[in-house]
Image (cartoon, rainbow, N blue to C red; front, top):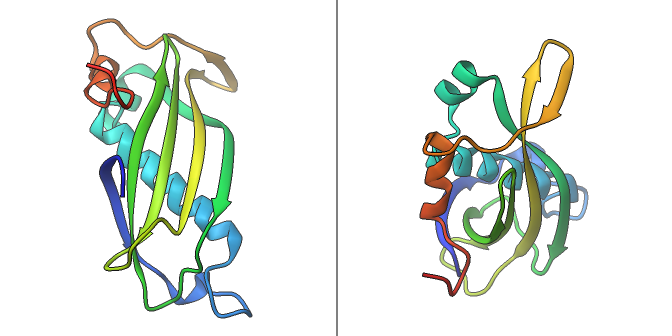
Length: 144
């Protein structure tokens, strides 16, 4: 698997469909949980969210199903950062079956930094020098 390992989970019985493999919607759940792990990794964790009212929203996700994932599998998720700007993270997540070669699925995701105030939600830049600045620890592939 390419990228930085960020998340691992056993496949839950309720995720299995009538074809005997993971239902398509649960790949999105796995990527969502991996996005949460990414947020923790770059300092946008529960403490940051409570202090600032800021979080990441997933505004776009493209899933590619490449291999079946079965109930007996454990999956690992790696992340590669394709790009970062003042309020967005463009990431690729790769889901692999533990102990099996290749990638079972990949997801390209656009995450948007927002501030939640009451019922209002608005985009917000990452704070300079704050917890969000650690997002640079996960640099785009091939960059210093």
